[in-house]
Length: 371
Image 1 (cartoon, one colour):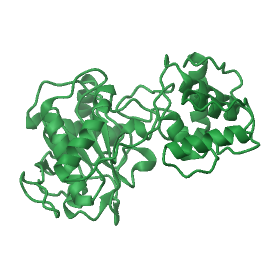
Image 2: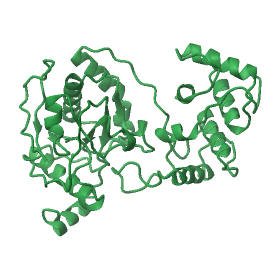
Image 3: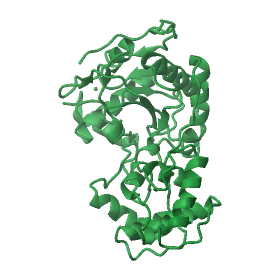
Image 4: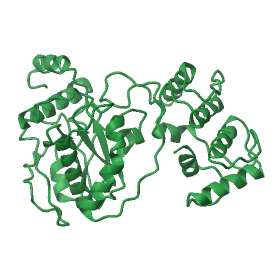
């Protein structure tokens, strides 16, 4: 039950609060400067007790395994000028109320929250204790199939075109560095929500700074940084060979009404929405926005769409491979048929990207052709 159900609901709606999908031990706050198991200084993190969190409405799952990645979100709330800790605590309460009362979850979805003032708070119960221990992970509800292997950080604000505040950035670097130090996560394994789900989260501006975030964390922790290859995000109005490939792949899945014109138009958007509905992933994949993003296509939806193709395959999906190879300067001279020349072009592309050379267009080859 909410602290004050009607009041909390009114406050949430009047503030236009919409937070992303982001776990009952109230761990104490981490004092700034305390050391991790690997000697890295921990940032100051206020536990659930500090911001008066409600008790979880169910059992929190604590996994006896370490997370292998970090996923960055934005809350898609207003870009508040209130940088106080009291505001950060109020935000944490509002997020929890929304996740429990509107989404029906047992607790806050994400593991940690970062305010525009740079105040860090524990999100789901037990997340802070797990992080301090460095050997367990609290299962959240922030990134679909990634929840059991990924820590989720909500960053207050909407970063579609607004700049990232310095205080928020500094605390995000500190928190990610501490996570990397505690769990042995690679600094390059810091992702945006859109890398795994069809959503614009964490906003174009914050997303564009993720390479800098990985580099800053790598510098802080002394680790090498390998920037990841990720699926592209496509939105209405996008144009180019990747859009053509999407259209061909949709046609291969039965969307014969889609015209291959290289432009993400309304017909393409409708086909994308239908593809997602048919696979049980319809609706908003980012709860930072209570407005569905049915036309956005990215993340693991690509993995659901692309087939494994080899010699003697034919049709629109093969043509999609050929369009992408041509865009990469590896034109095979074949059309709609996966012949020996197409297989040769695939092998050359795989070798140039350090992939296993097979001549078969598998998931990793698609990822690099598209990304």
